[in-house]
Image (cartoon, rainbow, N blue to C red; front, side, top):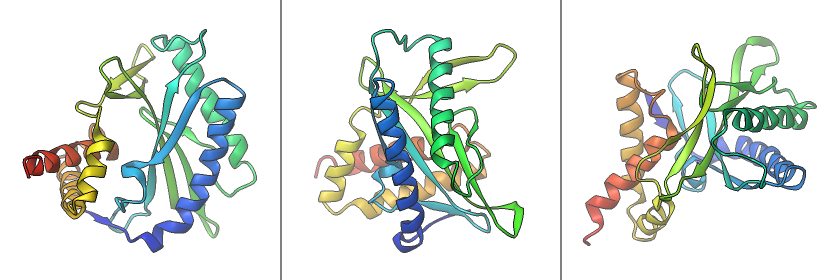
Length: 220
């Protein structure tokens, strides 16, 4: 089962990852012409980092693309493959003098893993990077790498995500953030128990938790 981690435990890992992802952001912006940014799931400062008991914890990041170069087709499998491959290559260049292994391309994220020095088979920590952009109606979409018989890259919409950060700020300002944290943890454990956590990663759980609590209090 998942549990929430305290900020002190997370802080050194968060600082490391933020530095590396800021470098990646600058490369993608300055060298390739993308307008982009990143954040820890739940905006980081809201203490939504979880750990599955007896397993090493990881940090889940969203890497947002707000605009693309004119010659980039956001619906082209070829262009989307190039984008994810380029991010992976550049991230590995940034991590090359660290103890992290090369980032791996999974279905919905890039994953960089750190293993214990005295036990290279045992993971100490990892961080995942999901690639997101907004669609025409304002919902966030996650870049998916379908590795089935016909390989393709496409955007998978996260429903009801268009104003999720505005709602989150409003809930926090009104003192209801503990309710969001409780609901987020409840959802993560529910999907883990149902073996449905691959379809409901951290960001999807975050959006669901914010919307559920917002609906509960929106008339107050």
